[in-house]
Length: 167
Image 1 (cartoon, rainbow, N blue to C red):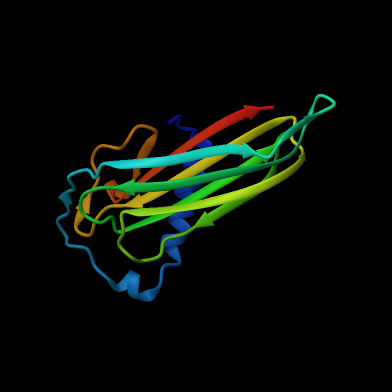
Image 2: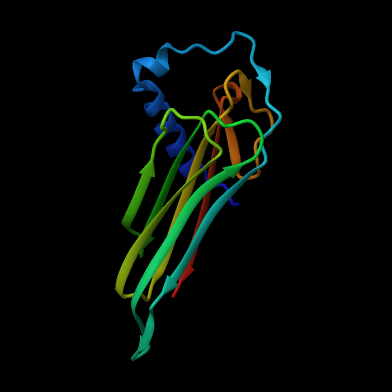
């Protein structure tokens, strides 16, 4: 994973906004005053892409479909929550994005998948993926996974990855 500072900042901002507008039930739930250090869940962050159906016509790649997915799968105590973001840019212009926010339900697995068709596919495709995981209730993270940063004293781990593909 290669961290990209602007995307991590955007994810931190999104996380802050989600927390600011959390439901009263979630806001009313209290964490214990003394947080314990979580045995860091072993997480795998998926950030995958592939193009299918494309053909070469007159030196141009045409009629392809990009499929790209973003997810997190963690072992150990259930995470308090997971939020995911993915974006696809073509020649510097955003053509697609998807955000799956916090659900308020503890879980260790979540993912989103997008699909974008291109009539003429030649150019630079730039993928952005982000994951925000929330520590299990009463715990905090202490050592971020590679490509991730900790926020709010270890209650959140924000991860980001980017990839450029030139066709």
